[in-house]
Amino acid sequence: PDSGPAGIFQPSNVVRNAADDHYYALLRVQQYRDQPQGTCVMRTTDLADPKSWRAWGGSAFDVRFIDPYLEPEKAPQDHICQPVSYDEIQLMVESLTFNTYLDRYLLVGTAVIRELDGETVSGIYYSLSDDLIHWTPRELIVEVESRQTYRCGDPNPVAYPSVLDPDSTSRNFETTGRRAYLYFTRFN
Image 1 (spheres, rainbow, N blue to C red):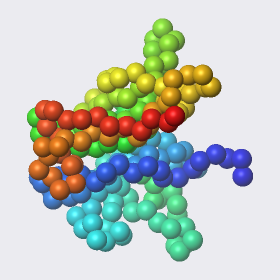
Image 2 (cartoon, one colour; image 1 turned 45 degrees about the horizontal axis):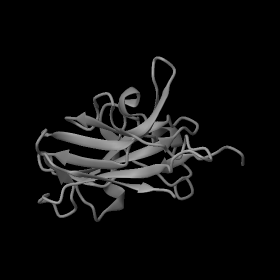
Image 3 (cartoon, rainbow, N blue to C red; image 1 turned 30 degrees about the horizontal axis):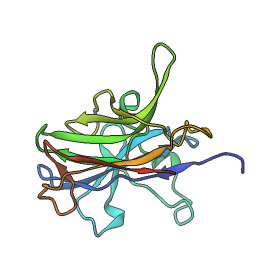
């Protein structure tokens, strides 16, 4: 009670990496006990087997999540993921694609950034990665009111940005090219 949200939230879409034949997804994790806050990466080779997913543990994809009710004998601290590039992407997870034009992964999400001059910039940002572990610093796409900063009378907040490319040859639009569209939800 009164502790706020804890656990794993808001998984990204799943993206297949043809080079290693794995499927990847990002997860937003809140700090709880030994689990640090941030964005974690998990992967599998078999989408049909939920137990095959492994999360990034800091040096390898070797973390298996457990259900503490079904496996109470397991030490929870041995089953937590290590967030990646926290300074660069913090909690961004909303839209993950492989961009064929840039030949890199493209992550788009919402963030609230405090600038050096003390100004807070709420918006939709992007970051790029070669390996889903190391990300470039976020770059602002568009400044928008976020649900976290919204106060009565502010412009309507937006959330859940997603990048889709109608020319994607991927069945699930997991790839983007040079001309993609940015979609989001506006709360009226």
